[in-house]
Figure 1: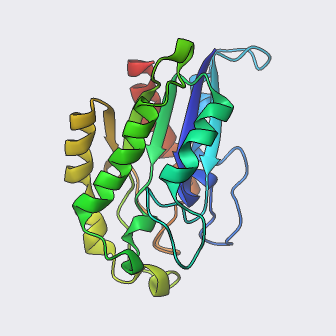
Figure 2 (figure 1 turned 180 degrees about the horizontal axis):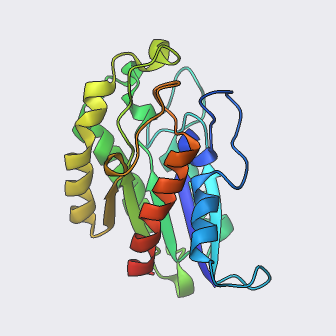
Length: 214
């Protein structure tokens, strides 16, 4: 059985932009991914095991002075070690790094995510103390909505500048890359999170990449 860890923020956790609650297991993209990968496998003996590790507000490597302990790089190693051996880690972070309180540049955000990728590669939490494979996902751009404007400000143009930097640094690190903005859009309900259709489309896009590297 192959093991995949999905490491991300509220869009990996499954935040519902309409209610502020959490989508159910059948809707969240890591669980949709698990279902798609195990299409022909017995529920008692699945070929793929998918682990959700999403936290609302999680940044790539930045300490949040307002929301508390959300530093994805600092939290990473205990999480990897608690779930090892891992064949693949899917990383989708960067949306929370857009917040004006961090005064971010697009390269700095991508570089922060690359630091997470490098830590995974150095972790020796893959099979037989090897390095897990990594898929680096650039989150879709934010869209204009009043719900989170007091937190994210005018982050739309900044979020649109991220994909080329993610792609460049993923190539530099020797990991696979997915620009989520080419397959899904952020919900207009709050400008930050995904609709159920977005979760499904993201899972479908990840499936083929997973099978190509694991």
